[in-house]
Image (cartoon, rainbow, N blue to C red):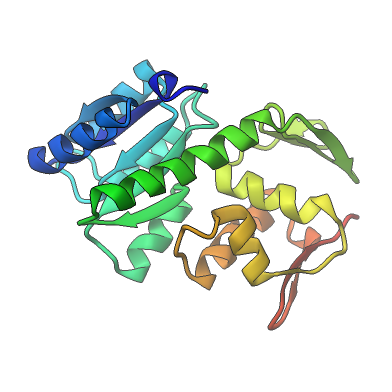
Length: 228
């Protein structure tokens, strides 16, 4: 997919940051839209259906966490990548962001070249996932990597992108123990710096939705999927 066909929504209540990010991404030939608060972000996302959303956390009217949750509920945006672009680096903020359905967390200020690299990495994972056309079953679970759908006992289970990718990895080889570092590299990529708690948060969410009996923790090593 050519850059001019890829749309990015930049959301921040600081007009200077919006202008800088928009300027740099537009120079990369991406199609860029902007919003100044969470409410406008949800409306723009619903209307424009961007491939990537760079979303600030602290904003008036509706903060980024709530906006992310609402965007994840919108139809047609299942494959949209959401990354928080914020100065807040506290651990609790990152956990809240991932629980809301975010795919990544980028701390600002960020240099234009670094931002460009991050955006390329995020979109590369989006494009690779979009091109991976596989449907397979593990027990009563069906993974449709073409449509990003998961069904359990013929009932669809909606999953944010990172939960889906983590589930796809674990179910690709049932009973295999995936090391934590391998999970981070495969699901989040080498370019993204995230902590081990990120994996734990996503596994907890999958346990709630798929069933805790399917996910086994191997202490000090990682996780594996158990088919029942």
